[in-house]
Image (cartoon, rainbow over the protein chains, first blue to last red):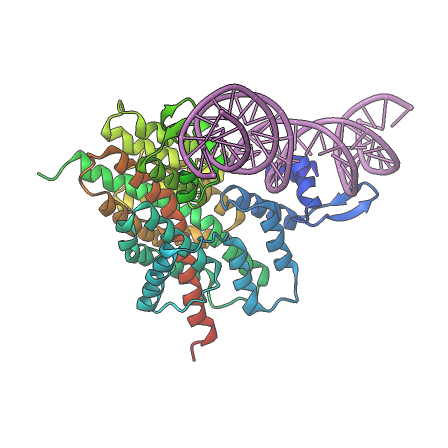
Amino acid sequence: MAELSETTGIPVPTIKYYMREGLVSPGRPTGRNQADYGEQHVRRLRLVRALVEYGGLSIAVIRDLMAQIDNPDLEDFNLLGAAQKTVTQQREARPGPSRDEAERRLRDLLDRRGWRTRTGDPAYRTAVGVLATLDEVGYHDMIDEMDAYADAAEKAAEADLRLLGPDVSDRERAVEIVVVGTSVGDTLIAALRRLAQASISERMYTRPPA
Amino acid sequence: MAELSETTGIPVPTIKYYMREGLVSPGRPTGRNQADYGEQHVRRLRLVRALVEYGGLSIAVIRDLMAQIDNPDLEDFNLLGAAQKTVTQQREARPGPSRDEAERRLRDLLDRRGWRTRTGDPAYRTAVGVLATLDEVGYHDMIDEMDAYADAAEKAAEADLRLLGPDVSDRERAVEIVVVGTSVGDTLIAALRRLAQASISERMYTRPPA
DNA sequence: AGATAGTGGATAGTGCTACTCACTACTATC
DNA sequence: GATAGTAGTGAGTAGCACTATCCACTATCT
């Protein structure tokens, strides 16, 4: 186990904690107080750390995801949707005129782009919540720019799907890609967006249009 | 104060807490135990809630941001950069071959796109961390798709800058736009990305290419 | 004028999360 | 056989975002 801790850079007590919480399987016991860990464990631990550090997922959510990966009864079709649903934290908007207006705007956008979406989708609800909040705080400009954000999101999603590819036979891999892609991908996109902002704004402000 | 709580939907004790933490100014006192609150307070509280709920920012970070808004000594040019830096939580990659490789790939991308970036930028460091982690977990495909993500990020950033516009004379407004745009915008883009994923994947998998 | 409800200000307490420590009973190795 | 390490488990901790309670006081209704 010392070796496991060494190669992953995770402290031994933390590894024990993850095992207790069911994020990592316990390893093949070779004695009453000894067990063997393989490359699988190293991979799994690295994955967990990636999701915690860059995916911002909670231990409980990661446990659910790992259970989905390890559960062979789940159908392939549902598997990916379930994984995606699990990584999406949902934030409800409280009812009110802002919310209705937000929902109208969003549906409008979805129709225009031909995105078919179930209204129960956590991402849908989160989007409604964000839009309603923006409306209440007076950021109508931002709502008006939503098409541009949707363009950006679509580009990212296309890349995501290319990653996944048409072959989802390796279940563990497929779930991993969905999970890592969406959660860690969010962080990557956010970071790149900031870099782009800085670069564009420097161009705009340091050399003001003559 | 009851009225303030009513119109914002925030419980009275929470408003008190925010005042204690310096997120909201205390209101003009009209007596020993009475104070007046105006439209400013409503706006500010709504902003705080937006940042907490959809921006995922901590109370401490929001306090820093509000201090920046209220501090008239800060130069306009630095203000926006400082605001952006504050909303970006930084996650360092630990040194190692993955990190060096990640940094090489990122610099390559930045050069190719003509993004000028300081290597001390929190977003830069976060991007390096994400890439290094992806490398360690074996997601080289995702690293290869980074250009697509950068495209998406650029599209979003252009929209952001359009929002801000060339006029940054209203400081409070400008900082607000940067803060709300980047932090709440991240959530919006993430939600739209998931909706796009779902829509594209449904098209791909339910009607497989004949 | 008196009852009632509400206010600003302060301290203390809550529930949750992600660890972290400590302990026991063992065992591999020098 | 002394030392160091290990699996497994219960308890403890730090930080965060509130939330509850109390106090002296006051606006308002009757």
